[in-house]
Image (cartoon, rainbow, N blue to C red; front, side, top):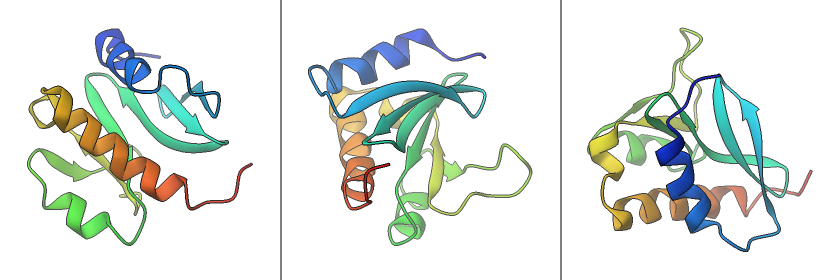
Length: 109
């Protein structure tokens, strides 16, 4: 499974000390699970962001975001973000906050 370890480490630092976040290999990369629900992750050099169905169209309008379509069919509620879209710490923090807003509303698995 290929993913940019540098991006994964940046995400780990955002979640540092969180016992409700675990890592799991999935989607051909690594995912960060929030209370058992996929929150965000890394595939190759891309950020995988689970924003949920309500914020999906808004997220797609953000710079460097696009449909997450690794199977050929877009996954509603998930977007890929190209590296320029999370190059700065505040950009990455914003994406992770958006993801946690959604996954925090889901029941724990």
